[in-house]
Length: 240
Image (tube, rainbow, N blue to C red; front, side, top):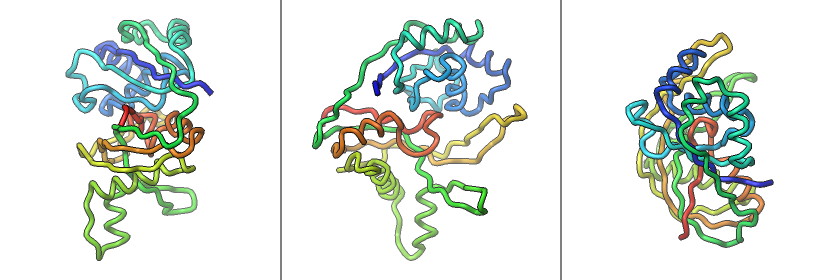
């Protein structure tokens, strides 16, 4: 399957106006951009994606520059937006959409430096039909109360587990570069804004080694951890 890195620019003012019109929550920037991308591009919307600069800065900037991974090239995104998007939302798409094909064959043993924004949580069931999320650091403190826990080390261990899924990659070193708690909101079926509570919002950098080319390609396309559709989990690589 092909994979493209896509880059596009969104203007906050028309994006916000469209969101108010269709009752999309605007307090959560990641959800707002997710909803806008889906309405613009349908199934071709890039996911995972990352917002360059300070996404937590909300609407104070002039534009949002969005990077994302997806299986479709820029021409399909532009065609979908031209056909599907409402005029107000379409006006939020500023400038051209850019794309770059990503490798189809990731070399085994290759080292890459990476950076990513992740939401490190653990999931557990409280009832047979209900799953809850818990900050991975707090979950470790509760599971092993007699140990001392470092937040950065705990999140690094969590990230290592994610990269090693299906033997895709090995985490060689990692450091937490930023941490905050971000309130997440989602639109319910009744079109109301539901607050899901605070989640850890963590920026991490480090070095990884590719173990399995196919599994690593799947990891890049899927992203890391939870809430990948809302601005978390995109791995950005550079040569080590």
